[in-house]
Length: 177
Image 1: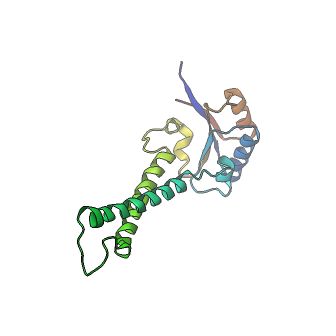
Image 2: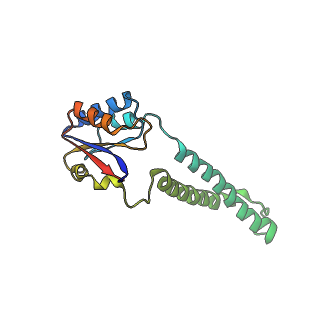
Image 3: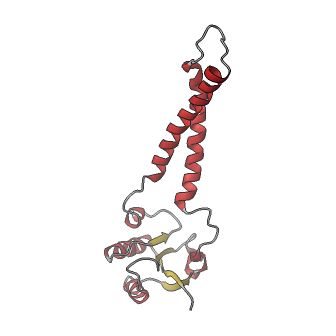
């Protein structure tokens, strides 16, 4: 038997896809996604109502760790491993260490942000089952597509199809996994 990824509906207007998303949310669906040729006002708040502040926290933690690590490297090198008196300054000269500490903190923060963005966005998955939907081909030009995934706890193919028909979807199709 062919596993089902979800059910896709195609709409002609941004208002129609926003209405469909609102009705899906009211019906209790939580795992659905919209694909549109341009941003639709308010659609992101309907589909993903609660922000997930994971990436800023990861980047903040990376900044703290990067700053501590950058300072420790310089302190270890200058004060512990190879102490050298230059110009009468103390071995632990924090003003001299700040530039390197800041640069290393930025390096670690940007790297954590990049890899964290890849991890939280689902990348680098190169293939997605939604690419098999015929309706998806026009989602980048002039159509608005919404897909209810089969992993949703309230998913029932017949009920989703009936809901999309009631909302006036131009095309409804099942997407294999």
